[in-house]
Figure 1: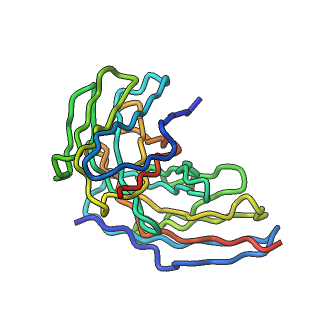
Figure 2: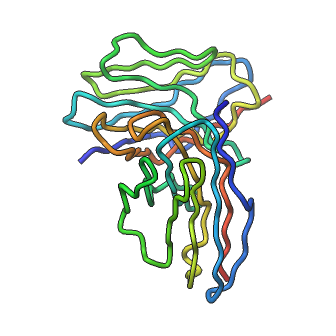
Length: 115
Length: 112
C-alpha cells in the first residue's frame, strides 16, 4: 500500500527566514507524482508545487523548492524568505501514474510564521 | 485560470433534510472529484468522475449521491445525513484523471 508520512505536525519560522517541511512516502511504483498543497485558514487547497518521479531535476516555484530524493523516497519542501501569508497547513500528496485520480495525502504540517 | 467554484460556502441542515452541494469549473477539465475533510485531517476522496462517468466511489454511504450533469458541473446530493457527516466538502477538477487536481474553496457542512 502506498503511504505518505509527514513527521512534523507543527513548524514555526521567523519572517524572511527559510524553513523545510519533511515528507516521506512508500511505494513500489516507478511512475508517480508528488505534490505539496497549502491550505490556509480560508480553507482552499492551493497547489504549491508538483514533481514528476521520472524527472531528476527538483521542481521550483519562486520561493518554493523541493528536494526530491527518489531512492530515499523523500520529498521535502523548502520555503525561502518566509512571508506571513505562508502560514497554513501544508499537505504532501502522492499519486500513482496509473491511478484514476487517487491522491494520497499525508497528515499535514501546520506552519506558523512569526513577524 | 485555475478556478473551481463551490456553493454554498456554508450549509446547516437537519438529519431529515435534503440538500445539494454544487461545484463548477470552466477550465475544460474532464475529471472532477468530491473530497470530505474533517477538522485537522487531510482530505479523503469520496468520488471521481471522468468524462462525466463515475469512475471511483470510495465506499461512500448512499446518503451521499453524486451527479455530473455535464463536464463543467458536479453536484453532491445529501439526504438523511448524520451529525458525523459534518465536515468541509471539497471539490476538485483536473484535465483528466491523471493530471494535477485544482481545488475549490469548499462547503462547510453542519448536520444537526
